Image 1 (cartoon, helix red, strand yellow):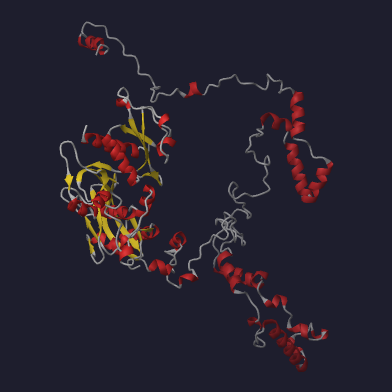
Image 2 (cartoon, chains in turn brown, red; image 1 turned 90 degrees about the vertical axis):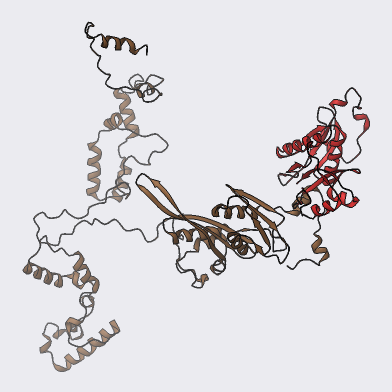
Length: 468
Length: 167
């Protein structure tokens, strides 16, 4: 207030007061944080040491450094290079070497000395797909090319049919011909002018030869059916032959290079979808991870008791709207002392159910049972506002519990139990609290050992032991 | 002093046991001593020894042999107020053996239990105002045969003042 008051006063009594020019607002430099500005922070603690001060920029020093770091090829090295490169390449190499002054490299070049330095200065002989662009082996496309008209296309097709490309897969190119089976005097004579006997013999020999070559009898005299372009050749013609007036100029492919057959590092990690051990029960591979983590077979997994105990809809409120998901609680048990609880959320209910089932099976833990039928003593567990009290009961009592606890007991193989929930009966928390209570049961043997007592179960003494 | 020293002892033992202390002390009086000995019989504490304000050596607390009387400072009328009972607490499997110590009788409300009632309580049923015992629970009673655990009292067929339940 005391700061603003003089200004206010001068404005109110403005008639007599001299108009004070308002200073222009500072252009920038409002401090948005308490740390020092960059200019202050980046100042080094020591003065820079210049090469000039160390006497490193004298011509003599520069020359000695250049000779040491960038020596010229010795005759022995040149001889070795000649074994690797053609004379043209050697000439190009030498021209390149001569174009660069070692002195420039010394003064301007940056030679790295850090531990991550590459093992070469610059080596363009290898193409590294990650850092290098793909080489363009073919010439750039002809800008004046246009699509062929019908005549040009027909001519091109005939050219292709006559060319070696069409005969690449053609057996006739490598096979003997009919003229090879006649005597030399008839070789330059047309077939029609051969004597009948010679012609028949030649044809017979040629047919036998062809059959031996292909293993298939061929029709005699039909020259077109013998050999010809293969399907691959035709496909190549359709896909790759240029349909423009550029004399079959090939273009550079824009396709990414294919992966090698076996990518190093992942060999042996490919997943097989179908495991013969599953006996066709898990063709889609849903239980593959579960099999690995639990060590059970698919048959055993499918034999478990799985029950969806609670489904609710949950909502994530974002600034774009509400995102609804389904939240599912599932229990899984083997009806013989193992019980697991899984909870999962997903947009789709079936997916949430499946995820929760997997988690329930994976979370299965042993539940201590007294005489394989009830719990040890009276248990209590609290989750949120829900308290679950479980009481051990005599044989034949049955399960007098709420329906969710009933399902859990059934999956775990508990047959005699009573339960009360004195406070909140929230479905989700009651399931969690029951699971917690069943897991954290007191162990009478451990209690006895802690107190240094001997423990005897008199039921087993008097009644000959409970049924196992 | 009466029953309130027992109530104090209960709270103190529960707190020090949950704090994982090895050794703790109670004021030296007959009531505390008898309770400590009953707890020792039930296996909740490892040893009871008389001492002064400073803790005795741990060996003295848990030794089975009778202590050498020459090593102990004699109790006189001058130092009797500073004498304390030192108890060794027990732990098993990383957990205290004595987890819950709940007083039943209070100075304002003494709870008595007769034999039929104790019979029911020991078998896990509710007896009068007292809830039945759970798995591994003990109930300590003050009877005219001293402070006894409920099973000892049933053996001796005596009832009495219910002091505390321990588990």
